[in-house]
Length: 432
Image (tube, rainbow, N blue to C red; front, side, top):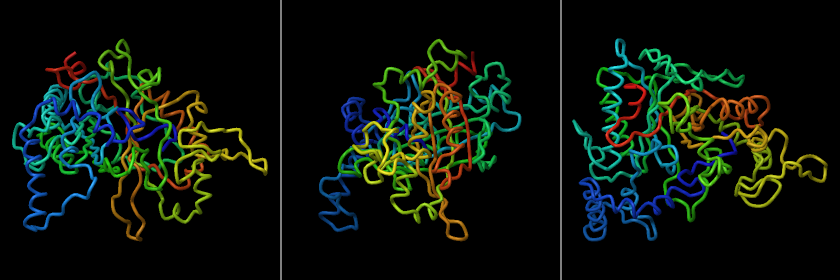
């Protein structure tokens, strides 16, 4: 959890609903798929049934975004970068790591990535899987589905590609506040799935898992969610499960160094990572029972921002620059020295910055009723040693928020650039 970033992407200052509206013309021009056509017809039928026959369906509230518009939003599979990095944050997500099966190596991995890429391309276009489709998402459009693939440190040992392993993929250092479950960390392969419809997201998860055949097996899997597009009266930065507006200072595409901070340059090393990025994934449990007992003023001191609107404690609005030198009548800093927002600022960390694209999660309750809930922290950068690591080291030394969170799982993955038409993700590595 860092203040420097916001969950919205494509333009990090726009909500998913705003981004979806901006894309509507593109989606309409892409042609109408069988599934999208069915989705439109099905939605019309439900409204008519509710109004005319009383079959138990409920008409959409006045002014609500039509589900057909949500379903029609489409992300592109092929491109300079993989989808799911700068696309708008979706309402539902799945993160899953796989280990290659015993005896599987480079050949099997290449075949698997070829199958996965073909399936992802079809599903992101709103089409069924090529083989044995489950029909789970039959009535829905693409719903902004994105599928993103990455390689873990161990993948290069399993495929005998150690010489191609990037130095930036060296294991993350240990942090004193970590309580890491290794069985839910790292992995040979990583897949991120996001969509604005839960069935569309699950359909993709199931299709990709079936595609593995005997080549790989699930190591761990996590489910997340965010606010649905159109749930607020106007576009705004999302809130996390602590109720805080989470992440106001994300790098923006308009920033002159945006690509430099996020992506490996086209002439970078290794060559197969050109236009790719590195993702750090952390399962951060929020100790909500403790947090919710803390008075509002103390919560705001812990974060360094007002809970109501995300504005810095020094005054202004959410986007007002934080005045770290401002003091109160008692001479103390208005933004406490250990406030989360102060510690995570790029100008307090040698310019270290990363693009966050997280999901919240809730996995039920412990036996004593404690909620197992928090944040699936996902951050992107050109080099984790210059992005995530320096910020986390500083947080580890004195972040006031540390008393209310616990890092329980961790992973670092190399995410290659996007596949060109006719290519599969990772082809330049596996066939280079």
